[in-house]
Amino acid sequence: MDLLNTLVDKGLRRELPTREEALAVLATSDDELLDVVAAAGKVRRQWFGRRVKLNYLVNLKSGLCPEDCSYCSQRLGSKAEILKYTWLKPDDASKAAAAGVAGGAKRVCLVASGRGPTDRDVDRVSETISAIKEQNEGIEVCACLGLLSEGQADRLHAAGADAYNHNLNTSEATYGDICTTHDFSDRVSTVQQAQAAGMSACSGLIAGMGESDADLVDVVFALRELDPDSVPVNFLIPFEGTPLGKEWNLTPQRALRILAMVRFVCPDIEVRLAGGREVHLRSLQPLALHLVNSIFLGDYLTSEGQAGKDDLAMIADAGFEVEGTDTTTLPEHRRPGCGGADTAESGCAESGCASGDKAPAATIPAPPEETRRDLVSVRRRGAGTELPPNA
Ligand code: SF4
Image (tube, rainbow, N blue to C red):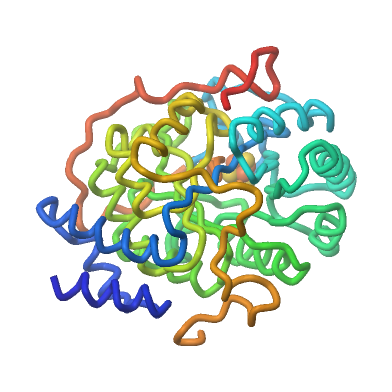
């Protein structure tokens, strides 16, 4: 296909595809799917080889959020029967993180529900970061605490946070359909504050909320413009008790097309397969490893993932290898001191917190997807419980 040859050439040159090309990837047929995966896989291997970075989520504070993100099980008014608890003590958070590190994770993602942290919360998280870094040499720590106020990004960076996550989630045009308590520009501003403070920015999206192909391309292009170092791609986990609990819009094939599109638009950026992979990719998860270079190990914030040992077996069986702490994830040209994240043209979802009003209908309707409530399991182990974590 001319389209795929063009996209591979552009990806190898770190050149941005056009919007039309990105839309065309989403419109490919099931007959073309393996060609799409193979093409995006070439771009993935050029910049990241066969390495897979493992990330481990620790939910520091779960549920009872005053915000109304309609995809989220922790939102205001959520009836989802998730674990609810307030801030974990630094030692308990560090123990939870250690389980992920022992399982092969090189980044720990500290996440808390809420609109954003108070200064006291930043103190608590700073203590937690110190505890984790003391006990786990070489581990990257990413904080995900919601919207930041002035000075908080600097304080987190000074406390040792290597990265900050705040997802854009969906296009600016449809943001008001998924949340009314903050807006798209608030989210952009927080990502920019994290970057200005010297932290590595992590920002991604949630697919499957009823958005159109144009919305998906819009949010991925908006992310590319923000130039984060990592882009988590979540697939909506439709929690019963949330406004989007009946949105089953994705097939495994569509999920793969979305990941391929993100890879072509973000060729040399860490693309992370995030919440919802087990639910929506199901037995096609290994194919996604040809597109992404990063996944979460084990469980998500409020839902359970597949067993950590099965994640590791999947990676090995598919011919990939877990990236060690002695390897830098990003290609050399994107590392600090190498001219930054230039490109050839010179240029709280379940980062796990993946939930109102229904989002607008897709312009190209996705094939009807069977409701698979059996695949959504509320997390009952790990942080905030007496049971050992999954890692
Ligand atoms: S995504 Fe974050 S801010 Fe939104 S409802 Fe969930 S926990 Fe609250």
